[in-house]
Length: 263
Image (cartoon, rainbow, N blue to C red; front, side, top):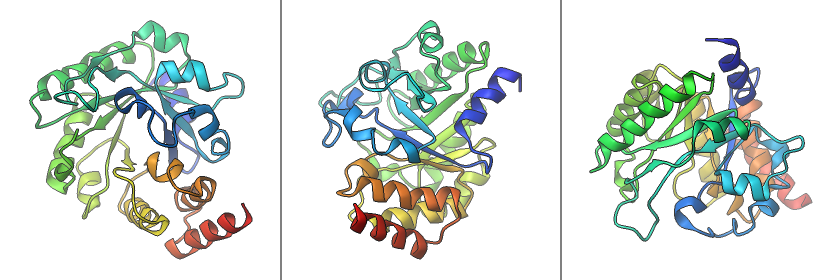
């Protein structure tokens, strides 16, 4: 691994090897998502507790300050909306020149293994890796499932993550599932957990994140279960404790309730 790649990877992962990425890229296919209508205002109180932002170039320019910014993972795939026929029909939306101009620490691209657009999405990943490796920019592959949430099971996710690593992704973002260690064991690069559908309670979020960390995940890339929570700062603080301070579920939930009451 050359100096530039090591430097960018070190921006994403703390000394403990763990990470807390905050995604606010949902608008690229969902439009003005609830609680993310004004992304700059939403993330302002949350930034102290995240390690990097996952964001599109448009929102980055319009809503994220370039001064003392958190490291940026730039969302560079898209092309279909939530009202379109197939969310898996994506292409690469951003040039390598734009990635460099925006000083991104990494880029993120979705792959849709098992969909009608499996081949196209994997070629997107391959072409992106080919371009970014030349400039020392890590690629994070997102094992997306589109509208088919039933695919969030261990055999499918293990398959998708391994393929992403084989194609050259430096990091893989995937969904938590039961027996999550089987997903991690088959993937030779760091695995980050996605938030998935919004959970009913903070405790549910803490439980799956804690389980995933115990089973080998290096951290999370979690958005809706933070900024759609009625107490987003408390949620951030509690998750931070699980990811970076080895807090138990009980300890993290206590932090959540404490910050919730004080805020």
